[in-house]
Length: 294
Image (cartoon, rainbow, N blue to C red; front, side, top):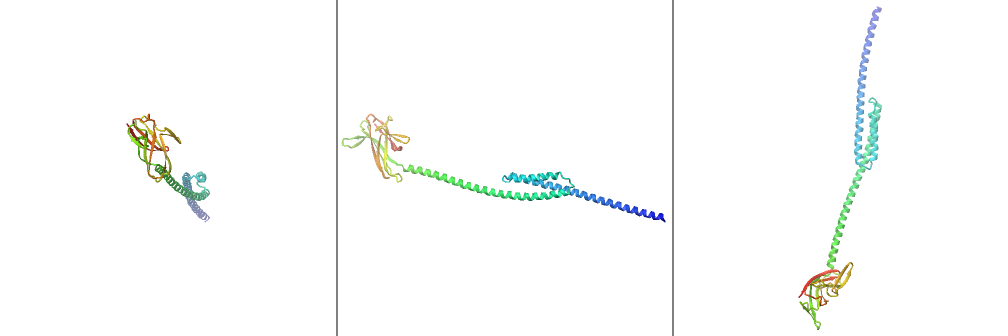
């Protein structure tokens, strides 16, 4: 009877131990599987952290290359991310607490990035507005400079036209040899041996924009041998020297005015050939003509 009880107890104990061993094996397998899943999840989490940080670094590199104003702040923020990335790369995959802490730090860095990039965007828009305003101002200035240059040029052209138009204009310029009779009458001649003087006549044209008043005119008579005949005097006008044969003063009132000038000449200078006649007002040549004596 006692042996049967002992045998029965042994069987029960064996069954219990077997059940315990099976339960322990099942628990151990479950724990192992759960641990492997945790390690895999932590590895993925670590890889995600590294990827997120690498993307942040790329974004900072792009922002730094496009922004000079805040480049220093952006570079310092990028360095903090690089240090954090180096720390994560050297982290044990099973260190859940550290991975969780780094995830929190990354969220903080992302908020810092958003704030910095918002400031960068704001500054970029301000710079763009300023650049647009500067371009607009430069365009207006260029237009005004062009307009001013055009007005100056037009004014210079107008002044030149007024200056040219204000000069006295001569018409009907002629010249001839003349004989002075005892009676004082004057007769023209084509023969050089009979000529006592040279007479040149012309008409000052009507000119309403010319300045009226006393005008001094100079006659320059050059004989066929290229000798100046007459008084053979000179007048200085700034850097110009005018040699002239005779001069006359007239009072011009902007209306037509007929003028004649008699030029005395040595008989040795009155020869046959073509004579050149020039009429000046001061140093300005007003008209020129020629005539011939036989």
